[in-house]
Image 1: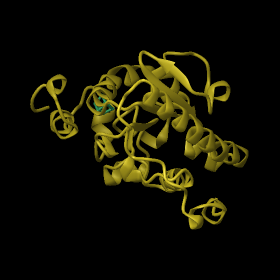
Image 2 (image 1 turned 30 degrees about the vertical axis):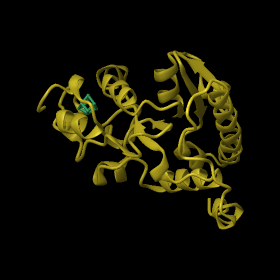
Image 3 (image 1 turned 45 degrees about the vertical axis):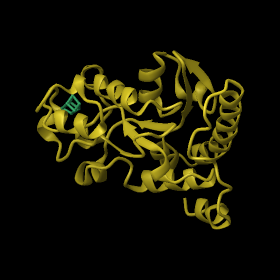
Image 4 (image 1 turned 180 degrees about the horizontal axis):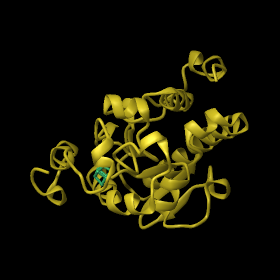
Length: 221
Ligand code: SF4
C-alpha cells in the first residue's frame, strides 16, 4: 500500500492507498481490486456483496448480468448509474464466487466504512444479506428487511435483494422490481424530510422513467 488509507480524502486517494492490499488471502487470487464506481458525491449509494468474475476482470462493480439488471432497475426509477455510487462489501473476488468468510469481511469492511465517510451518502441501499447484516449490524435477514426504510446513526438504509439472487430465483425478480418502486417512494419521502429540515435539495432529482425503460426492458429477465 502507498500512503495511509485512513488519511484518504477522496476515492482516488483511497484507491491508490489500497490497490495492492494483501490483508486477506483474496489479495493473492484477485485480478483487480474493485473499489467502486459512480458519482463520488452521490446521495444514494448501493452496496453489494463482492466482485464476481466480470467485475474481477474489469475492476468495476456490477458489470455482468446482475449489473445490467441493476442498471434497468435504476432506470425504472429515473436514475442512471452515473448518478449513484456503487460498491461492494468486499473489494476482491472470492474464488468460485463463494460467500465471503467472516474473517474476510472483518478485514475488508474498514475500507467500505472509509468509502462511506468520503462519499457521505444520504441513503444506502444494501444489496443482499452480507451487506445488510454488515452495515445495519443486524442478524435479521434480507427476507424480513427488504424494501423497508430504516434509520441508523443519521443515515437512511433500504435493504434490497441482490440483483444476482433475483436473476437466479425468478420469484425474487418481481419482488426486487416492486422494492425499487418502494425505494422511489422512500427517496421522495426522505427528500421531503430534508426540505422540511431546511437542508439543500440533493442531486440528482428523480426523473420520470423513460417509457422505453419500463416493462420492455424488465421483460428481458
Ligand atoms: S478483500 Fe479487502 S482486505 Fe482482502 S485483499 Fe482485498 S482489499 Fe484487502
